[in-house]
Amino acid sequence: MKNSADIESGVLPKGKVKVPHPPEPEGRTPVRVNGIEIGEEEIRSEMQNHRASNPEQAREMAIRALVVRELLVQEAAAENIVAEPRILGDGLKEIEADAAIRALLDEQVSTPRADEAACRRYYDSHREKFSSQTIYEARHILIAATPSNEERRKEARKTASMIIKKLQDNPGIFPELAKTHSACPSKQQGGNLGQLGKGATVAEFETVLFQMDEGQLWPVPVPTQFGYHVIRLDKIIQGEQLPFEAARQKIAAWLEASSWSRAVAQYISILAGKADIQGFDMEGARTPLVQ
Image (cartoon, rainbow, N blue to C red; front, top):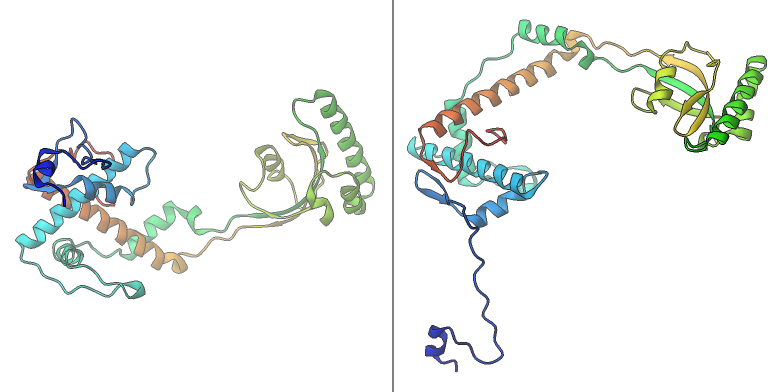
């Protein structure tokens, strides 16, 4: 049996090692919201829910989220709000605190519906969001040459120019020349790159492609980091504008959600302004009020 005096004095039986409690971080003031402390263990657990570039940023985001939650829980209690937890996806159920927060926000935060005029203004100002992008069906022949090999670059350009001349005389042999000369795997499909949109290729290739007319063979080799390209644009599929009527419901939902988020952030700012928050600067934190 272990001697109680030894245990109390800190002396352990032979062969045992005493593991001390991890020290609290030096220089950190405990985080409290109206006297309720948010513990380090809770903060470390919450940090896992926030993507950040470094641990300190994750900690800041975690504390802010926990402070906001505590503010809302306390306000719901002050308002005597009790709500029935809802059944969530996969058979999960809200905890009572989350149900109370939901009911509090439903009661305290209201936003107007997005009318047709507001939806129309947003649509007219962001028409590019409601259109499909133009698609280019192109094929190419790549004569490979790295930028560091000047001699090879000269040879590649010369070969690409020769291929262009042959294609100008006989456009139908593009697949054949691609299989013979191209260093790109697309040579197995006669150089066909499929359907290309903005950002699908390197900038030098894309700049030329977007200037071309349907059916055009670019008259000079196009240099990129991979070598020189012979490019032909087979087809252009123009993007289509989605009509306002088809986009109205989506726009209204976005405007209303955005308005609600701003209203909740303002409500939380009011709660934070009248609360006694210690160990954390809500005004100085860089993350949004509502996560």
